[in-house]
Image 1 (tube, helix red, strand yellow):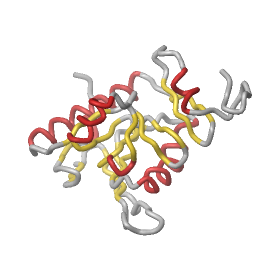
Image 2 (cartoon, one colour; image 1 turned 135 degrees about the horizontal axis):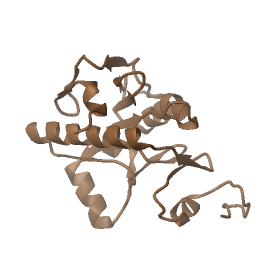
Image 3 (cartoon, helix red, strand yellow; image 1 turned 120 degrees about the horizontal axis):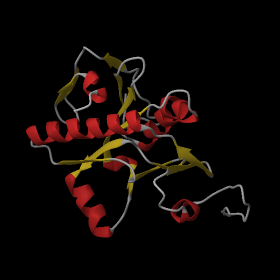
Image 4 (cartoon, one colour; image 1 turned 135 degrees about the vertical axis):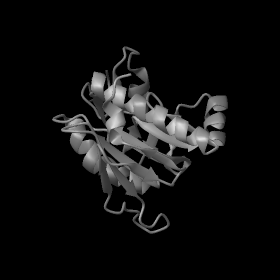
Length: 199
């Protein structure tokens, strides 16, 4: 692969990201570098379970939203991220479908969630870099999902969405055996233990 400046090892561009083969692996582009996202059975299962939980809650609340995840992309100041789970308004999703667009922009997102893969480079990205990027992009809610040692969800919310430097408030962590009880972007209640349950 050749980067924007003709270098075999970067910096890379959106064209390079789009040129990657469809081989089941996922990549993100940040600061000109392509990073392969780790994934395993438990990570992917937890992401799918969270999408199901959010879809069910949105349906019960009659919320006009669409719940999705990778391979859809989110544009951030650093580049392109592929969140595990995100929520957008139904009209935004419909418009993207009509335009055949796969990239959403920060202000369009209502909630983003990342499932942490421990002991990988993406763990620091999910816990540090994306906290800053998603806040700067204006995404009002960011959830960080841990599966080890037991499932837990850390819920971050923008402190001042209209401020000069948007930041997330220190998050509340809800552990297995407790209950996530969020009211925005729509009411949802669940025990994080459900994220690791096999049906």
